[in-house]
Amino acid sequence: MLNIVNLQTMKLRLPPMAMYIHIPWCSRKCPYCDFNSHERVKKIPEKKYVEALIADIKNDLHLVQGRKLSSLFFGGGTPSLFTGSSISEVIQSAEKMIGFNDDVEITLEANPESVNPQKLKDFYQAGINRISIGVQTFSDEQLSLIGRTHSSYSAIKAVEMAKIAGFKKINIDLMHGLKGQNVSGALNDLQCAISTGVEHISWYQLTIEKNTMFFSNPPKLPDSQLISEIQEHGAQLLQSHGYEQYEISAFARPRKHCTHNQNYWQFGDYIGIGAGAHGKITLNNEQTIVRTLRTRQPNNYLETKNKGEKKCISVEISQRPLEFMMNVLRLKDGVPMKYFSERTGLHQSYISKIIINLKEQGLMVDSEKRLLTTPLGFRFLDTILDRFV
Ligand SMILES: C[S@@+](CC[C@H](N)C(=O)[O-])C[C@H]1O[C@@H](n2cnc3c(N)ncnc32)[C@H](O)[C@@H]1O
Ligand code: SF4
Image (cartoon, rainbow, N blue to C red):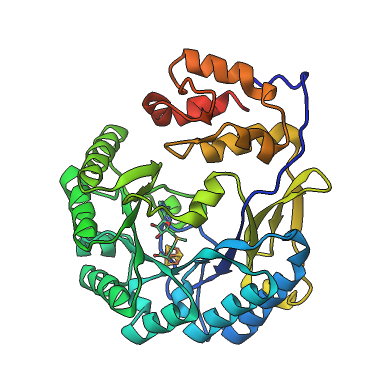
């Protein structure tokens, strides 16, 4: 338990700043997906939506506080349903209004069935320098069980086309723990991803979320023992091919980590624009941290266009240690110790007793300089996080 009596606050420092841009439409809703994604029924109001995104950026300019963007991430939904010129308009507006760091990373999520060579070239020319392809599995049988509209062949083609279009940074999203999947099925998916030569693989365990078709009609998934075996063998396979696990679900070749996601996990700031987008902002002068949330329904969102409407919720002092730890301990190498005070505005003594106790139990590494879990702690992250509730 946290000792709130000994409350000491410190000056918050502004962390790096990123931008998340949500595109809320998909060609079909997948049965496992609880993201704010809506099956397109008629023509997507792309032009109006781009105008709304640009208006959102304008309305959030006061949150930037002199920083430039270290990364942008077009997520969804299916951002690859949009044209290169729409994406380019948003990127250019963000650059003009806020500015980019020299090594800015700009990612776009793409579904294999919604890309072709020209479209990928257009995205590349628009300034996208990292593409994340949602493959999920290379088994055609599994793809159909999880309601995907692409085939294994089109997934491999999409990666090849992305390379030809010029992309040097490519991620493949895969899911494991699918119905009827065994260790060799899961490893085969990883092996196929490795064979494409991409430098980043996100490997998520399928979870059954409320408000999804799988929640009302759940498939029989592998038990926890089998999941552990899949994860252990999978991590070994990836490691033996030079992909280091740097976060629970993220594997990358050396120095090929995703800057954008790493910023979330390091408790950095981000502006969230688009329907249902979340943001997290440190307000230096007010010594507060706020979370922002925009209207979820695309139509409602479009109606509030130009008004910059968003919910702002302050992250109370008592919530900050848990929120901070929930993010940073997902990273295998943790973060520098000083980030705790700089990014929560709380003195280190606020958590020191808990940390000492976790070190004694072998769940956290005995280091003065970094906050990080031991391999045991990494496996039992929930046990660690319980102490910060
Ligand atoms: C924003 S989503 C979708 C990106 C893209 N539209 C697609 O489907 O390929 C990003 C990733 O989250 C993962 N994901 C979505 N729902 C999931 C679930 N219920 N369990 C585990 N992973 C999930 C998928 O791997 C997906 O590619
Ligand atoms: S998984 Fe991707 S394609 Fe499927 S509904 Fe969700 S966002 Fe859309």
